[in-house]
Length: 229
Ligand code: B12
Ligand code: SF4
Ligand code: SF4
Image (cartoon, rainbow, N blue to C red; front, side, top):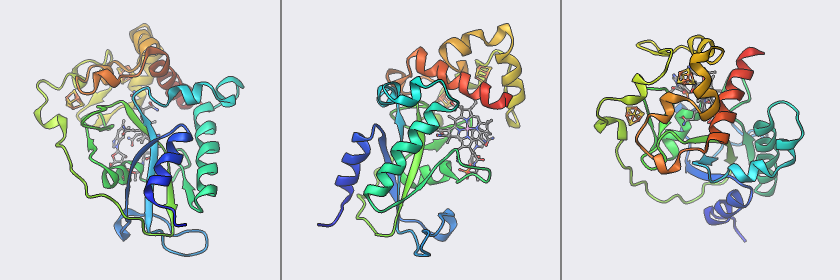
């Protein structure tokens, strides 16, 4: 029996991830060869969209063990298991530096676009999505043709994402992480710590997929914790 994309998609969902698209890599994509030297023929991205996969993580041993980086460790365990089952290699966004260019790969895999915040925006999920890994395969799977909706940022009136940060961490030069961190450590950042990044929450796209406060707060706190190490 040959493994097809449908089998992989089902297994990805059973593992608690969302299927985030696929592509046939070209040299410019910077996808590494497989460990045995063979070129990678198909890259499958997996991740999270909205709040849909959060409960899979919340029910995991990693979420309860009190050790650092629970989401990364849960993602690593699930991705490694998937890779083994499908004779693929696992590539992870948090392994670096150097980092695998996940945002570049994401744009090759499906219709997502750079937003003014640096995060990629999805026409349906807005800013509420992320990546947990890539599966690199030696086989060339058949992929459906893409039907890309345009970037929502093109028609956005007023760009509220750029006007909402309480400490103006988004500048003409991009995201100033040190300014954000300073804000999160002061009274100005209390709402972000409790309910998620105010700039991200201000985007009108994909509001019905916005993370619940517990998930959004987890990400802001994890970001702050990692910057403090
Ligand atoms: C280093 C890093 C950061 C750094 C610097 C970001 C930067 N200026 O590049 C810091 C620590 C500041 C950061 C912050 C955040 N990050 Co970050 N980060 C990364 C990481 C690990 C590597 C990025 C990189 O350098 N790649 C190497 C280059 C060569 O790859 P590339 O794809 O070609 O490069 C793209 C990025 O550099 C991007 N970019 C440029 N400027 C900015 C600015 C910001 C804020 C971001 C997020 C991206 C970004 O544009 C490039 C072209 O597409 C990626 C994971 C990954 N492996 O890609 C996550 C990643 C980009 N981060 C992500 C997220 C969600 C965040 C946070 C929201 C925190 C969080 N975990 O929730 C915050 C944003 C701050 C906030 N207050 O909300 C997501 C983005 C998902 C999406 N929808 O696009 C990623 C993909 C991780 C993931 N698991 O999904 N991040
Ligand atoms: S608020 Fe507007 S410009 Fe900002 S990310 Fe959302 S759609 Fe794009
Ligand atoms: S988390 Fe809060 S302080 Fe940091 S960039 Fe987002 S809105 Fe600004």
